[in-house]
Image (cartoon, rainbow, N blue to C red; front, side):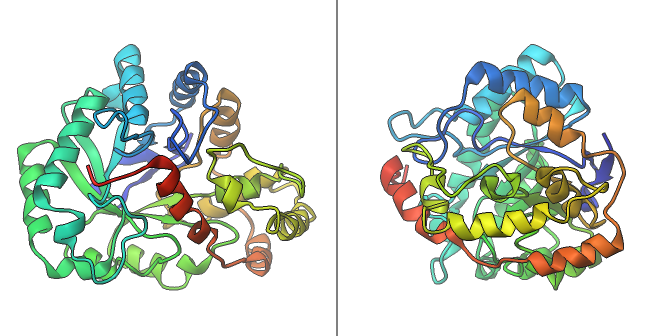
Amino acid sequence: MKYRTLGKTGLKVSEVGMGTWQLANDPGCWVGSDLDESLKALHKFVELGGNFIDTAWVYGYSNSQPDRHPSEELIGKFLKDSGRRDQLVIATKVPGKNMKWPAFKNIPISKVFPNDWIEKCVDDSLRSLGVDHLDLVQFHVWQDDFVDEDGWKKTIQKIIKSGKVRYWGISINDYQPSNCFKAIDTGLISTIQFIFNIFHQKPTEKFLPYARKNNIGLIARVPLDEGGLTGTLAVDTRFADGDFRRNYFSPDRLPELIVRTDRLKNILRSEAKTLPELALRYILSWPEISTTIPGIRKVKYAIENTSVSDGRRLSDQLMSELKNHTWERNFYDDCYDPWLKNSNFVEP
């Protein structure tokens, strides 16, 4: 496993991290997780050198059990059983109190991230993870107009001073890579988590240079396009009820996806033998990236994903060729409303 510096935090993180949205099931989003297998995947990931684990207060959350945070709790069990807390960088996220994804314009941060809510969620995460401090806490949604209010700034500085959180970051809205520049300029934000993959290359235009200039740690999420870039989907693929990909990859979208992934398979060569390998190597070929976090809930994927971290980067020729495979679109627009409806999310 190779390691990179997480921006101005100075933390050394494995360049392949572990995303945990689907780790412990999530009502209306992900189903079918086997908790024993998820624990084994965590152990295997760390055994193979992975040290960056990304989770969130809301992963697995249900109004029927408002005090439970299943993904964090499962990671907490792993930390307790393994005794490896000091070897790992643990990142989590504070959701908007209004439980809306993405954050909308004209709704002030005092409604989305009131000060007492930020503090509550940090304390909840500390408890569910069973740790005395968090290496990184990220705002789970964002609008850059939030910087016009000062409450959150004072609150996160207070929490840092308390020792509960070392660094703060933002998980920016889907496909809005520039919607964080004003936040970066405050100097209070150390990392940005954002969508980046072969299909969505827009961040390379303005966002990566801006982050590099400001020494921001970059966490690339959705590297495999929610499974679209695994090369395993077919035109007749159907997802189970409760899996948000049932809408994300609806039957009318799959034919175009298959055409595009088939084209990518046609350019596989010695630099990458499988589509997931190509997708991860593409991201890691950008030196600005600190880590990428494919979702992992099975041992086999922990092994396959971490094996890409071997120091090899794609050639300039292949990187140039991949520019022809961009596919800018936002399938999440049809997912959030059903997700929120199915999950029965209300303001806690």
